Image (tube, rainbow, N blue to C red; front, side, top):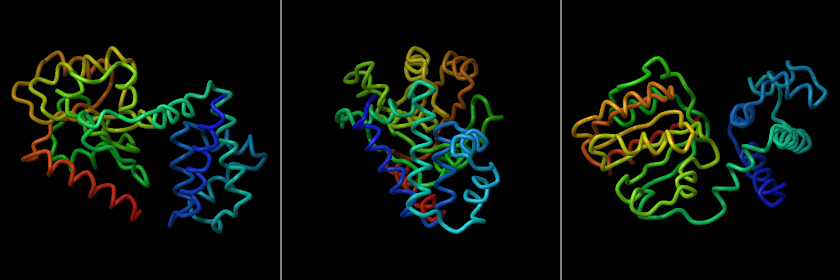
Length: 242
């Protein structure tokens, strides 16, 4: 199943852990992306959950090549047993070019941030699901909503999620917010947070969809798209510093 994609993903994970300034924290990030508990991972590896906890908490020395290989293989095997959702999501990101006119910026965080961090970066106002500001975010995509509507097919829309749905989808040139939220509702994949920039009159339906889907909805008040992207990239740089 998706052997080339599995190999590419394995190399990416192993490379990030090896080069990370905090390998344990990076191991935790990937374990959480795959939605695997410490106990499940430990059982698969035949070790106690405290071993996984010690690596992730930096209480053990940095893992060697053999440990990293076993860790990565375990993530992939467990994901395959569950249907390979993460592997397939990753395969979408390498299956072709994204429409450049619609995608203004797409980045992944070295270590996860929270919805609240995104809120601060975009100078945002929460209009739905304020109780979910602690949700973890692993990346973001900034989308020109007009170009997306004109150019993107249903399959291409799915590529906005990168390799995980636990990301921020940030739509610019938004008038009411209705179209982006309907698209998310129809696709069935829920991002960790949706940010709308350029809203002139927020549609009540957009808020209702966000509430129903339990997706935090944020209206950004930055002065322009350039500030929006620069602030988000600064957040990426901050995550890289740990």
